[in-house]
Image (tube, rainbow, N blue to C red; front, side, top):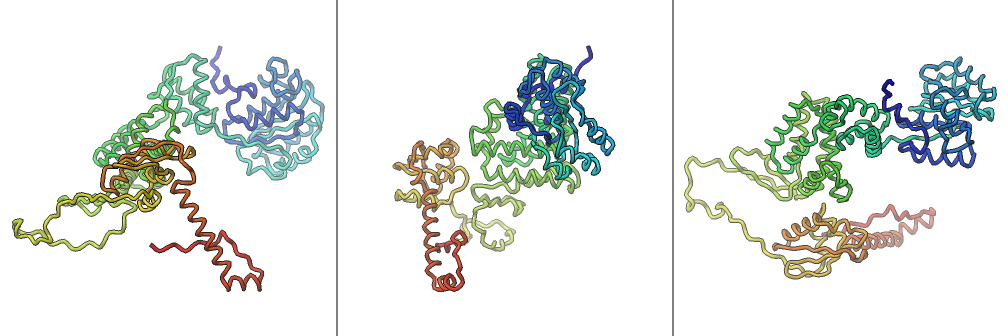
Length: 550
């Protein structure tokens, strides 16, 4: 027996076995069960998402010998002949090959006759947008007043090219692209039944490479099985797809977190030696950065069985949320600008160097080593503008003894931080710190329960319990220690009062200021005159309170 490709062998024969498109299946099933059937359906969506498959299943539902049903039996003569493509009352037309009016006119002439075998004559017209204008015009009358025994199912990847006169006569369903997780799960199900060994990471690669098309995913799976001599392994799939080795990308991000430029460029050169394209590398890096941002915001968003979960968690703890967001934007812009680079590797390396150069830092790091350029000074994004630099005196020709140096020019020893007293006003302290990132999220959504001997006990409401995690707590403890000049420990419990946290207090204060501003506008004599004489109206949303002076 000849081999049957997976895309044909595993083509769904019923709505129950169809992956995805639940919104379409539900609507069609309800219509069949209640026998509220439309005469023309339009299925739209990209290739491989199930347009023709749904059309064939619907044809079986309409003609199954058990009656109109959302669950055709698949065993009667009508169901078996439709599956085999031999049902006399089902006509499939490829509009890409039959675009002219003569082809459509022949179809419409035959539509007037009663079905030979089934309950309905079903016409499936694929890529209907390819029909000529005259062919569409010929269809309109039949679509508007079709015989009761005729059903049209139109399918297209480009609904914008279908005339509105045709669209208005059809019940339209938009099919969605498959999610990579849906594709991966279905491939796993198929391989388990086919008893073909596989690696989960390889299926994840195929799920993303399919770009939302289940048919493309099955074709890639066939190719992967052949490439791996009956096995689906990650290394083989990567080689087949030309995909990027994730370990190299994690090494690059690790170098960024360590600010090790030399190691980063060595890792980039290793990517080039393996023949990995710069565009693919930047695209894969953006995907990892997206996962890091999700992990930092919603710690449980990345599944524990993710192949690189441990590496993701480690990087999420080492990189600030600001750095992750910045790297993501730089990766996108670098990928877009590759065509303008002298060569691909130059575009990739400059993108990585840009990430390193603009990495946000928590402190001002002055590098006055011999020959260090001015760009070696890293200034945090929220720092105040630096004062104008004074010209440096030229280096002396002879060493100068310490006692010959003017007192004002001698090296100053770093001073020990002076502890700052805290009066217990937590909202005032939070407003003074102006924190961002993890520390700011916890501080803004927590109330102070107790503080003593450098130990702050905070409580967060249930609605914001995600900020009670150790990453948020450690960042806030570090910020408090820096500001107060002493070692601070932070403990967090869940169950605080939503109305008592600084974010809520600030919101109420802004609302009060806005109400005062609206009241002041309404009491203004000129505004009152405009209201009286011109029937004017004050728009409260357009009023902004005047910023309070510091």
